[in-house]
Image (cartoon, rainbow, N blue to C red; front, side, top):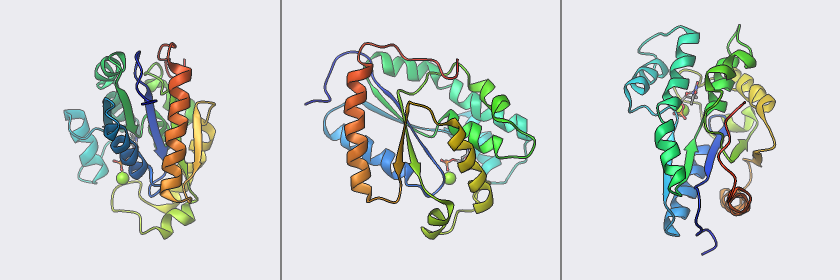
Amino acid sequence: NALTRRGRGLLVAFEGCDRSGKSTQCQMLVDYLKSTGRDVAHLCFPDRTTSIGKSINSYLQGTTELEDHAIHLLFSANRWEAVPKIKELIEKGTLVIMDRYAFSGVAFTAAKKGFDVKWCKNPDRGLPSPDVVFYLDISIKDAEMRGQFGEERYEKAEFQQRVADIYKQLRSDDWKVLDAMRDKNDIHMEIRSTLLEMEELCRDAPLKNLWT
Ligand code: FDM
Ligand code: MG
């Protein structure tokens, strides 16, 4: 089929506030790609299974406290520890689909008092840059109407609003902003066709480095 090709795989990231449908779209895309026989890897950040990820998990669940700079660096380290695997997958032609990436890292820390975007970007500078970022755009009001935010740290409307404001500052040409209030199948179809276009564009270009 049209998605079958030789050459490197694509690096794709999904971003958005809580309740934006990010994880749903990520899963729908992974399922679709698998059904076409494509080699696909589904990564989630934070990856809570590593030892760094376990510290992050207990921080998010409120079991432990960590200084704000320290947790920021742990989130970043949790991406860097995945880089060898990401590069290997991309090289052998696998489509790597990531649920959250460095943009979450910057948006969630820069939403805290006393942090600026420039400082927050630094530890993630040089990571493999996604070929495309799908941003599920939703107002915090609409997100809240989909059901209460959960119990984890950061799952509060006021904080999510600040996160959304920072995400706006991070947008670049590699981003595809999608209206998260549309029918989820329509959104999925748009993601599929964007991905096809991207495969054509990126066929011969090497992966770029983020924020360099
Ligand atoms: N989060 C996620 C961060 O604060 N920094 C990061 O670098 C990443 C990847 O962790 F509130 C926040 C975003 C969210 C929480 O994410 C856990 P999931 O997608 O709900 O597991
Ligand atoms: Mg969550």
